[in-house]
Image: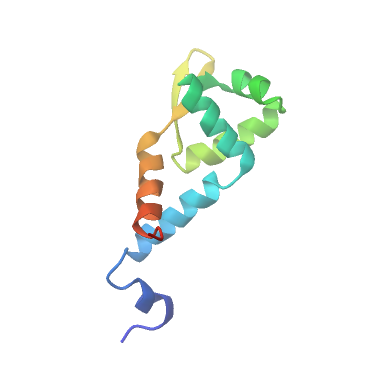
Length: 106
């Protein structure tokens, strides 16, 4: 018989899926990163200069948060010369929503 958390998750999501979901939620669970997602959703794409100017935040801070978001696959990137354009990775957002929806209280 399984013990502790292993017993709780038997028959639901795999441990690796839960760990990935938790990692994604940690990456998204910051007010500035949520603002960046909203901004990118509204604008479809933006480079770091546009993001930090629109959010009235320092460029270095925005860059640090974008790195976290890239590592978590929350944003897509596309290089255009010396600029990197960011957009929302809706596939990852849908995966987060699917995990949350599975356990939503009805």
